[in-house]
Length: 248
Image 1 (cartoon, rainbow, N blue to C red):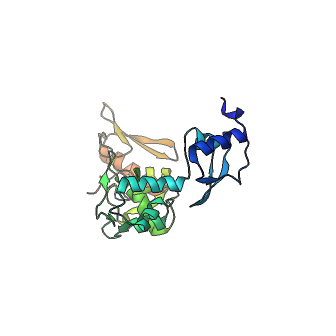
Image 2 (image 1 turned 180 degrees about the vertical axis):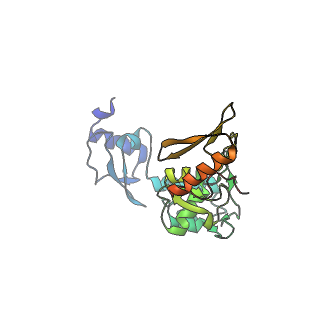
Image 3 (image 1 turned 45 degrees about the vertical axis):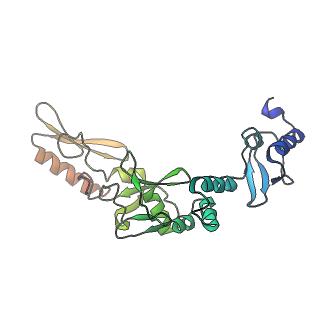
């Protein structure tokens, strides 16, 4: 049957078979199976969900689901009910502070329960898992320290993706982040923005806000480097670390 053709009565009959008396449906304003409704969880209160997900996909209260996943993942013998409730909380600085400790000077994020640190993903960033969801450590750290999630991207100032000391992190736009890049591994001149052709001749090009501008062609790498370095300084838009190798 098409989801749009399911009546409110039929929906309530199906919920009874699937969820029993787990939820209260007295607050619902039913339109069709794809419009969200207010469902009351007896433990966590009101949550919104589409009737289609609630019946066909057998989904229920998100917080109850997270709590159930945490119990299954962590095991009830080794974790307190209070900590299970923390795992079931929505992501926030309060939740992360309850689960982890962070040292601003070393940049180390430590799991309070297991005493374990993070591991690196295939892109070189440190990550941790909470209820099988992957989080980048630097974003958790930012939220723990400031009390709110980053507005943009987190830039590792010295280009070391695993150096999460507080002084090495900043919340910047994607454009600002692109102006503090480490030198790419395929760069042939050792200078970002300077390319070499077969003459040989060195071309200096600066890119600001997506617009590239050729600064000239030069017979020596030293001259091309000096020109592009001065252009970046004059623009006032590039970080002083732009173009250097990542520090280890």
